[in-house]
Length: 118
Image 1 (cartoon, rainbow, N blue to C red):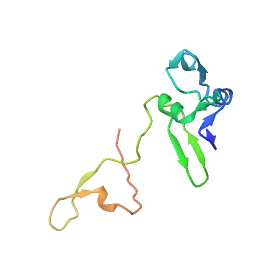
Image 2 (image 1 turned 60 degrees about the vertical axis):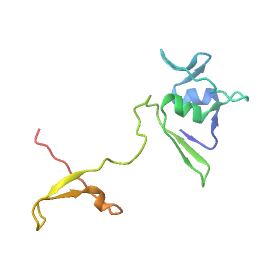
Image 3 (image 1 turned 90 degrees about the vertical axis):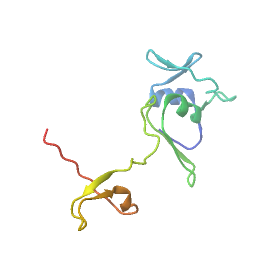
């Protein structure tokens, strides 16, 4: 959902996401998530609260004042794009097998291919 402000009309939010703002919280079908302080004094929905309560990733481009609200993951979305350290033996080293760290390629484009026979 692309937005140009961090508030959204409740009817528009329901139309675009399926989540309805009810007195008991944000509901989609039988599932309801408590969301106190989700409504602004003007009756709009606070997008930052929605993002936090529903686990929807929120990305902002400050240069264009554009906000992208991703789908509800309910805790299953990525919080960072940082991969864990990967260390493999380097069998081509002249000094024998040495550990090779993927982070040594920082700043370069890397293609990592994995294959399994099953």
